[in-house]
Length: 414
View 1: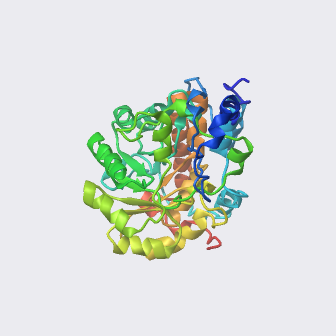
View 2: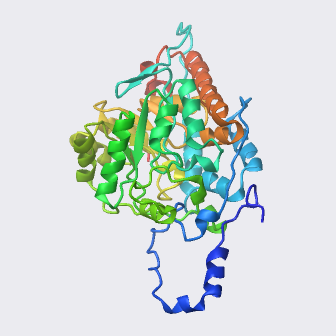
View 3: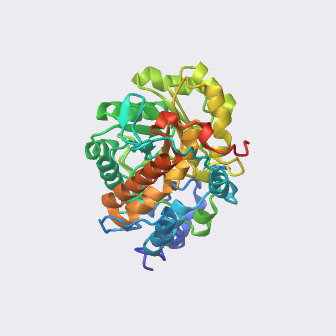
């Protein structure tokens, strides 16, 4: 089987062969069957470390007509399992589809004759000044997209001058990614069940120069993703588990330990991160005004509105639909970061008008990485930047702060 391209399917063949070769093993105690939501895309089995995988290899600037085209082009070059992992959402993918539909339902209301010559796209978020308000969100296993892995993404986002949020589930160690991105960067955290391991990760991030910790709160259990199940796909261990526990050298055990998350997350866990690191904490996965208000009341430094791009709990509203009410609850007391549905400059404009301070764009960045490495990432970010510039000029907004609800037609609010 060719595992290098579209026919890549990870199966239980190795495990089945092992059982057949050693029937006596059937008499021994078997591992516990995972409970509901415990099996993740990162879950592994013995033998998985032998499976090889290769993503995109080209490094080149991209001519981008729109980001939807990148998705089509990436499917042509990526292994089936890897593409399905990036492309897919959870469950019936209602939320993934709704993110795009609801975003398009927010109309723009331009103010012509505003005398705007050159809009200023710069913005400051948690002390970091950015040339434009579009950042790279945390996404795991960039090696599924390109052989340069997170290094390519870091180099591309640094060249564009923007902030990158590194996923704890990166293939490359956080220290190496930090070296490739000398600019502003934050570290995402899936809170481990092992508190010592959690401490290790956040202190490594602080030592490496990450200026904020971003705990994800919407993925304590894994909601089934049809593409992964259909393709029998698990992220190949051979791509690397860069942020595995330092004291665990066995790649399978390390990967399994990384998938063991604290299920009963609470606000004390969020405050513990602040106490341990002294860094700002950005809570990611906020989808209700109640959660946003609780974050502000407890001293959390920023609220990250996101439904995980439709990859967590399926059936929740589009992120853009809940953003206005969350912004009303926050009342400008802390910054708001937004993702889930950003595909053009218009989308960034819409989200900012409805209350976001900065937005993040996920899948298009990974498709850019797949097609062009670090230059592909840079191309995607610059495409979004340039599109936002045009929208701002045509709409009559001289700077980011001037983009308000006066410039959009009221959307349906969830």
